[in-house]
Length: 124
Image (cartoon, rainbow, N blue to C red; front, side, top):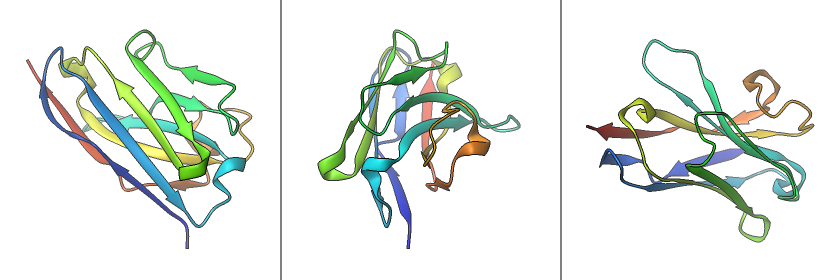
């Protein structure tokens, strides 16, 4: 049974930092591209960041560049999203996804598995 479990969300103030984690089980984690997406109420799921199976390639949406950092630890089956200088516009449910082919890491339709999400709320 495949499980992706996100943690680390919460309520913070603008300018604060948060680190999200996603732990995977039931998959050969080291062979998957891992991504973070977010979805705000009434909006489509939006790409945030992704990292290749080896960690050698990282991809960021414009909204994440310079503020967010994605990393992974294959020995622990975890992928992490460090978020700095958070803004109210970052408020959303953040989802972790696993993509086996990794050819289009910014497309949510390419992902094979998803977690349940973790809420991030940034107050002004």
